[in-house]
Structures are given as C-alpha cells and as structure tokens.
Image 1: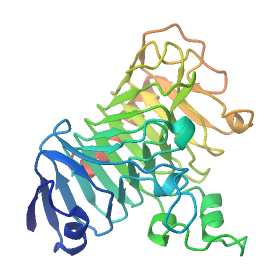
Image 2 (image 1 turned 120 degrees about the horizontal axis):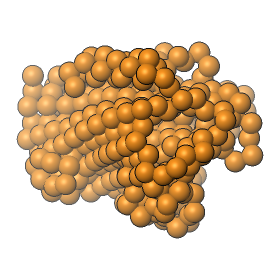
Image 3 (image 1 turned 90 degrees about the vertical axis):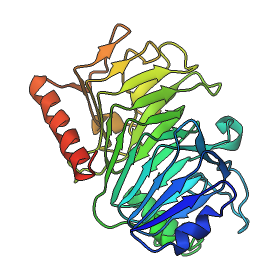
Length: 321
C-alpha cells in the first residue's frame, strides 16, 4: 500500500496519475483549486475534514471548451471518478458556480465507475451537484455519434461515457447540497445518515433527485435515515424526485423532512408522461408539513421499509461502511 501526504501546493492530478496502487492519499487542510480525474483503481483519498479540506473549481455548462464547444453538463465536474473501488473521505468537493440560471448546470462530483464509496464528504453546487453513472442508453448513443455521423465524436471520453453493467455507489454521513436535480443518474446508490441540503438559486421550484434507471434495473436511489433540510429553499418548493427518464427509481425511507418539501412529494417532469412509469416510494418518514402525495407514487408498508433498510445496510457493508 502506497501512502502519499499532499498539500495545497501539490498537483493532485499528477499524483493520481503516477502513484503506485493501491494507494491512500491524505490531503492536508486547505483549498485545492484544481479540476481532477481519478482514472486509476484502488485509490482512497482522505481529507482533514469536510469543512477544512476543499477541492474546488468553477466550470459550467455554457462555458466554451478548448474544442470550441460548450461544456454542457457532463464536462463541468470538479472531480470525476472512472477508476474502480475509489473511496473518498472527509473533505469537500465544490463547484463554485452559483448561477445555474445564466451559466447552466455545474457538477461537483461525477462518478463513472461500478464500485464507489464515500464517507464524511461534503458535495456542494446548485444544479446537478452529483452524477452517478451509468448514463441513460439514449445519451450513450447520442454522445458517441452512433446514430448521427455528423455529431462530434469524442465529445465525451469513452471511460466517462460507456460503462457496461450496473453500478453500486454508497454514501454515508455525507452532506450533499444543491437546488435542481442535484442527485441524478442511473446507478444503484444508497445514502445513509446523509444531510441532503436544498439551497435557493432564485427559482421557485427545485428537485432533490432525478433518477433515470432503465426498466431492467430492479434498484435505484435509496435514501435511508437521512435529514432533508433547507438552507434558503422556500416552504413547499422542493420535490423529493422527478423522473429524468422513464422508469427512474427513488426510495425515501426513515428520513426526516423539513417544511421546504412539497406536499405532493414527487413531480412528473414538466409536461411529460414519465409519471406513468416512474418508480417512486416513501415510507416511515417524519414530515414537517401536511401531505397530499401524487396518486402515482407508492407508500411503503413496514415490510417494504425493512426491505430497503436491509438493502442499504448490505450495500454499505460491501464497502466497510
């Protein structure tokens, strides 16, 4: 096992690209203004604390890349993970763009791997804070230029674009902050004892999760024993989830939710019919407001709540969380 002690003056990308693996990299307290990609497997990065150790960058969707094209959502990340069995602990990842209305989406962490875990992390942005691959199939086709030969081939690096098979991502004791669709993607992902913080970016409506799981996936996003809190979001303005694609799946169980959560709980995604296929569940929740849930979501009975609690615990155990 290789051990590296890094400080703010170090080039983290160089360290990540050259360190013999498996490796543990310790980050000293401070602000690292760097955009990094973790492409090698079996790397653990541990900070000195989520409030004192920060990796930050400020790319945004409408920014023009060196290739002359806009970044769009998926090239805006501050940190991107494509290596397997990467673990992040006790630091913050921030996308410093704070105006998604004008600048577009702004990813803090993009996870494009099958196995990933995080503990004690703080992820901060506004729209699209945390992306959990794989991509929806139609986006893989589009970005690869498979059906349109005139489309820019190579817009997304293949290690970020296509991932065969499923993914398991676990987050424990983390804080995830954002406004619109700030936890999105297609992974089987579990969030236990996390603090899910809804910020305010000037818009009247916001959404925590935007799942895009395919019908063949039996499990999607699961939030268990989490606190859903507001840091500026107005009362009744935040939905638990809306389906980014048909069959998207999100489960909220054993969580505590503030008054910022909309009484309807879930949204259909604009004027689409995705609500007819969305797989949205809640149960055993402590809500601060009176509810009037949409009639196409499902309330879990005690057996269902116990099932998802067990699935969450099993997933966490695979990563030693």
